[in-house]
Length: 424
Image (tube, rainbow, N blue to C red; front, top):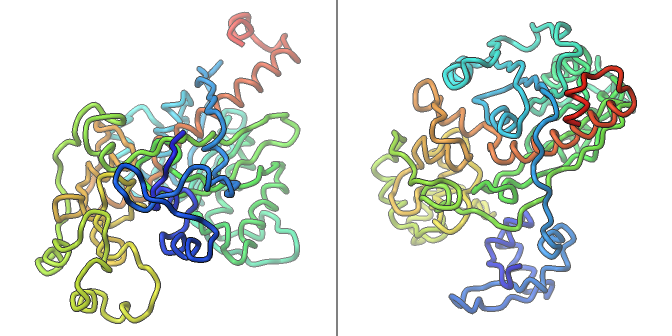
């Protein structure tokens, strides 16, 4: 266990700003120290024990090895995008039986990289999922967050009609998988003061699924060099007896250097690839920002020029004029690397991350090619679930399905072949 944690590391782990930590320092909630290596502000591991959510830092990191699937476990994925979730699931040993996506370029990306996958480029509302009944073990999907019209205290499937969650729930109802995994932005937790999420749970309950307590997983805790957070909604078919555990967080955090240079994540430096650039004046301004810095590191005159009215509105706005440091994870990647609200400037060169740098920060393999114009490629990568995060979810899915398979063989040995019995 590390003895000291930097202010950036603690802010990332707690999902709060550095300003909040400094405020806590002033009121005595935390007592900072000077890091013995560089004399920077830091916190001792002992002082962090007051935070229940950081308990994993202090427990012994006992991790079971991933299991091989005992048989083919099939996945159907809706809103598949460029394949981040599907690629992680496949890496864990699950089989992609169906991938649905309405946007053309992500579909081209999926077909180019995995021609054997069944990619259906179509509006999900036009799809009939009944032919897959009994053929699919897991349904996954990153549906957009949309509000419902509330008919009462409990919501049924029809109350969600017209939303993409309705299509996700309809697919589950028609396919009847053992497990369904919904994936979304962290903001779904508080959307409509929590009523939207509660409505989703109510609908899944109505169609025959028990929903585990939704979890927001931080990508930095799952071998992803990025401060990305995703909400996961896990639904288990009622009566199946399946148990699922969310993946345990890793203590080690990866940085942009791990993504772009040869080392712990990749055996080589990032391949050269095209990328967007900055306009002349914007580049001149960002030249003044140090690694790890943002607009407040600029001279006051330049701050006012760059921020315009936003300068007087208060708040951190730490994504604006932001240059990422080599030694920290990247901020969450967006669909466009150069827009003013969410700059992600390279640590040394004054430019946005290239397409392949973007892909590595999302932990895509270097041989995964993206189709379409450059803007479409950035959008596909920015919208994706990080592969390593998806992989660790997939590992736990395989573990749960294997245990279910073993139990079913013990209950009904006559339904299985001698080989299946031996594997289990």
